[in-house]
Image (cartoon, rainbow, N blue to C red; front, side, top):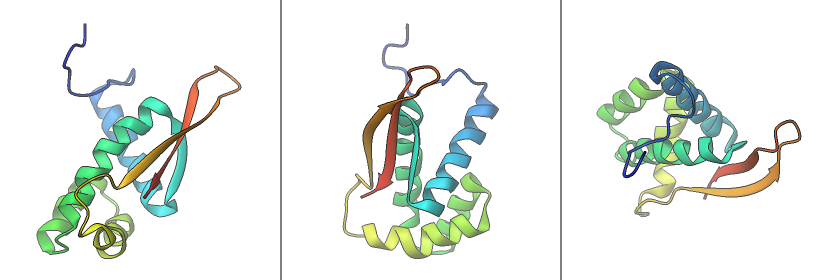
Length: 116
């Protein structure tokens, strides 16, 4: 049972899950909106909102914190310099998830995750 468990395993090892979330976060920062599975989107929402909250200060420690998670200079710079300042006065809720369609191959529920 997974009652009160903190996160979804997504059928992956911890290293694979960490890499998946990192790559999804980089794609979301780069494009502003991506389509993925609902459960991946829900996990990504938690992951990216913590990064935005940390990046809002915009100082060196914010850059280091975000870079430690993303390992991508371009995405880190864009998040800290462009995206996070837009949410300076907002207390959470930086992303939106909209369910879109059933995927043709396996009928999995898809969703679009985007910045508000």
